[in-house]
Length: 289
Image 1 (cartoon, rainbow, N blue to C red):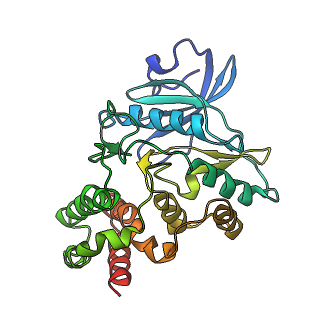
Image 2: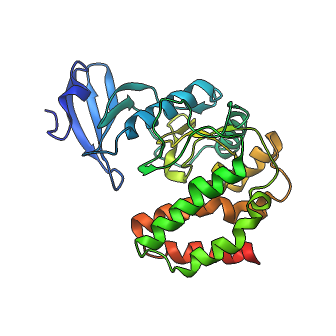
């Protein structure tokens, strides 16, 4: 018996015998599909922003193509404008095996060696989206300007306009704006980034293998992923140590973390309010010194 929340176009022909709802995110409904080919994962959204699924699919396919063998990315089985079906990942039910954190750090370091032609969207035909947010992802060679003008400033404007943050935070940002190039750090090549790498978007399966899910992937700067990993925690010290041993970050990266955390903090401020606006202001104050 299938669920009425699953669009027929998404599951027709997959031999679905049963769909069991799962605990999902705040914007999507998730299901385990029991099919004739084994279990599959499905996610649907009601009236998603145009192109959102296409961007997620492109991200999954890019990560799957370029990730090292140690770092899994689920196969896209089927997708439509309002849903996606992926291979099922059987998560580990017990403690993580020794070496799992180090393996993730090394795998991510190898992934971050993949370079693109310019900062921005993975492909020119894709809409400018990172998750549900519309952004300008047209190609550019100027990462520092991209980060300030296409991510931080627009999100700050949205947060102020929605009343989610004290307008004084925008004044702090303008104080820092002339230092945008310094705050972004040394120039580096456009790198394939996951784009939303908090602990919930990393799975560990029953065999101890790490997996990446729910990307907002684009050609960016690898410190984007590192800063996101540090924002909410969930990654062991061994993970970052293994990353640095494999692919060291430029000196001063720790000081740049608050700058790179501004986009996700502002996204959360706009969507959820709460203490995220205050956290954004604290990050700006740290950067101002």
